[in-house]
Amino acid sequence: MRAGICAVDSALHLRPFAFVSSRAMCPTIARRVQGLKPSVTIAFMNRAKAMQRQGMDVLSFAAGEPDFDTPDLIKEAAIAALRAGQTKYMPTLGDPESRAVIAEKFTRENGIPNCTPDHIAIGAGGKHQLFVSLHCLLDDPRPGDPAQEVIIPVPAWVSYAPIAELAGGRVVEVQTSAETGFLASAEQIREAITPRSRVLILNSPSNPCGTMYSPDQLRAIAKVVADGVKTAPDLVVLSDEIYEKIAYGGIPHFSIGSVPEIAERVVTLNGLSKAYAMTGWRIGYTGTSGEFGRKFIQAMATLQGQISTNNTSFTYPSIPVALRRCGADVERMRGAFARRAELINRRLSQIPRLRNTTPTGAFYAFPDVSAYFGTTSPKGKAINSSLEMAEALLEEALVAFVPGEDFGGCGKKHLRISFACSEEQIERGLDRFGAFLATLK
Ligand code: PMP
Ligand code: GLU
Image (cartoon, rainbow, N blue to C red):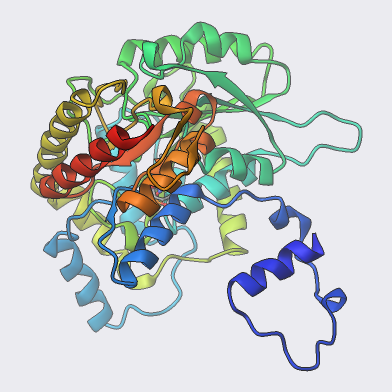
């Protein structure tokens, strides 16, 4: 372990201090972080950026980040607050107005019952809200006891499992496949529930699959959860709805937290990163319901109060502006994502031996590339996995896709392509991808 951490230091070109005489002196890093899997989406995004900085013409489809600029109205609200001197500490969970607007949004748009400003937390991005939520739900197992279980239909976003494990949970994967649109059935969820089940994570529209659960499918899962409580009394659904507004396949978005029988045990995650092109602002929020929801948000306040306190103060006025006044911007961007989805779908369907599932939401294509495993790249790299293909594609064809292994399950046969970029880039990237696959021997 020691040597590993020092090797990372040297890879980052950190110079050891002159008085450190030997490698044995190198202090260790906490085991909890040594064992933490780095985010592969962030890793490939950073690699592509580093290559671009070196002047290489890399086309990056790595980050799940809209290429649009944040709408002006949203920027103006933050600029005005900054000018007005809103630069001090604020209430930990956010300013009262933003919490009220979010509660109203969850009530009106999502149908979540008994959701008041006291049922809302605002934090530094959806990932931060996921981190805080899971740490408020999961306990480290007592010595000799089994860990609490976190049920995750896979493939799923790369951050769920590492954060769940960091919080002390044990991940129970529910396997899905392209044949069922990467959706878990209610029956599969029923089979996964045990007395140790603590959290079920759902994500619709899905990163990385680009598919969505229908309202009926989610109602069926809600019924299973309601029944499952007899077996697992502490079971909570964590519904990640960050791509809610990016739906274009005809399936309406549905919030499982609106089902009255289980509303109180659903924690709904959302944020401004995706729908409002605000990834760099770091604004995420959580909504809950009823008595447990209120208690849960108080727990989040305690934890956030020891982590990050409030978000950057002058960004709060942008939240009501985004949620109340930027519907036309959201619709413009949604329309662009819909056109890009169609384009990338068409382009992928023209490539021999690829299997693609039509995306209906979010901005990801997730083709099965496994028919090309067992080949060799023009520069002699063996391609036996998604990671090896993503590496060779980046190094030899200057196209950054994310390898599928870390999304879990059948993800290892897939590459994730974020099409939150221009149609021109999609055309060029898919030209390169098709040409690269054609050269594999
Ligand atoms: N959930 C999913 C499914 C995501 O893809 C992302 C993207 N990072 C997030 C949550 C969190 O986004 P952010 O931290 O930028 O709000
Ligand atoms: N969610 C985005 C993605 O999957 C951004 C990077 C991250 O946070 O994982 O690419």
